[in-house]
Image (cartoon, rainbow, N blue to C red; front, side, top):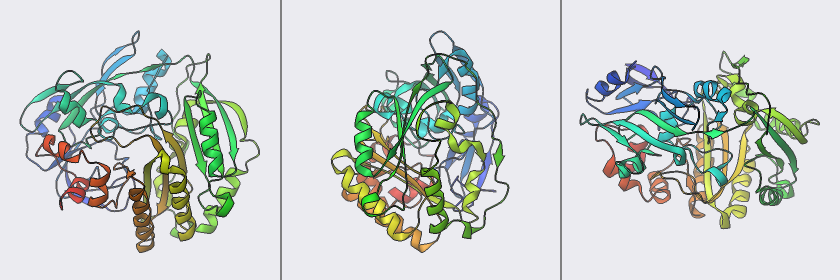
Length: 433
């Protein structure tokens, strides 16, 4: 048995671990009995990638390209290929991943299983909207090709299906064309939450938008921060990103993360004199700012950290966001990283995809025990009351009631779940149903 944790490092739990190096070996691994679960690079924050006392099929050796049509931008690759490696091949050819999350250290299989989203959801939808086909191995011995026209119901269940429909072997993806590896960006000051919604409305012709928020600001300053919008540059070099230059070798002392240090950081970050205005920058710092620091999760210390990410419908968004920001200020458990953005109405093909039309808020909290749990519970209740939901890929505390209310189609996934595949998350949110 081997102790494995997720990116939040809240707990290490024992697993039997398989590391197949070839697709045939991965198929064979699904025949050895359950409960089992596929595991990519472990960037999920909570327990959706854990299967305590069960088996993990780790996919990091399944990282080969199967086919890449440089004319049409269609790529098929093994499920363990990371976006990091994918970008190194496709960017020089003039292509980009159509939807990227906040890190490139996720696998294709993980991106499908969590139906990840990016800063361009209003125009591009989720990652799953660009998936053309999936190879899936089931514990029954079947190896299936899934697509919108072939095994369509299982295709929908697998996109956003949290790895529970079987072992994803390969993914075929339609890429997006680019002419340059850089983006034209513009950063604007936000005085409050109303400014965010005004700037978001004014930025409809910018493909990428995101806001950083000072989560400890109170009163009339609630929601102050920076609004960033971007589009791909029209011409220039197609230069790929480099490796991380910095790293965190040891767990940071817990006392470094407190309301005073976070408030000081937020003030300095917001008032950097050079940040406002237009600029041109490489895709890496815009899309993947934290990837510049290897093992940045160790900054939260040995006890790990939680991330809250929620989405609420647009009609309830202004009031709900004020309440959520008010709670973080009230508890004094602020975050260095607080991201606010809008989701559009482009539907996902996935059965349990997280985004809905509305506003989404994401922020990290150092694990301070009971007080952090109380804060997360209060925030979850606020989101649920507004008709919103939490993101399974980031969650570590969501109640079964909150999950089932936010994802009423969960029984359809349960009906199509491979009976030998299971996760700690799925046990936690469905066992009382």
